[in-house]
View (cartoon, each protein chain N blue to C red):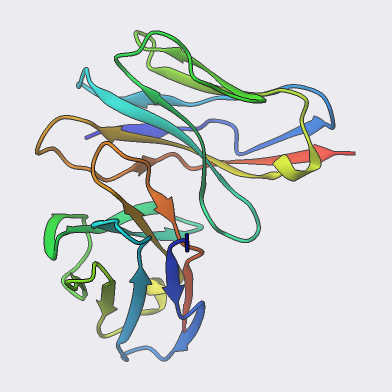
Length: 112
Length: 117
């Protein structure tokens, strides 16, 4: 059974640009969550989707958005990139609340 | 809001020895989950062990066990017979379990574990 797949693995963008990251959950998993990991702030929750609906959102500006498709694949978008958006973005999927979250290997975003 | 604190930024252990990583948390809830995740250089977060707050018995997974002290809000991880492959960053994490509640994980700042040959 394939694990959580995040694409791309690495990304370099210029300040002011926008970026879209993709996450394919484990087959059958309907819950997808996104986290930002930085050396200074650690791991912070961005948002969670379940059956195409955003159920929860972390304390991030509106430049961060996401969506989930009918096949449970999820994308997150960051507009007007800032240097501080440089981070490892992790996606996790699960069957639901009471179940284990499985993480992907992340997308390393560098903003220059 | 819940908070998770890991007071040991770095730890080291000799191969085959035992090491304990500390974690404390703050919550006003009575029902929740606690986790230890491992993040090796590959960056993928891997679940090591999980504890339900309503269970008094400490969770165990092979060489990994926890000491869960609910009243003290403490959740330490013990690694026995440490192996070189155990070297990684370890994160303690909290999640509520009530219906309709927030489902995200709240992570501690991590403990970098080095295993010495």
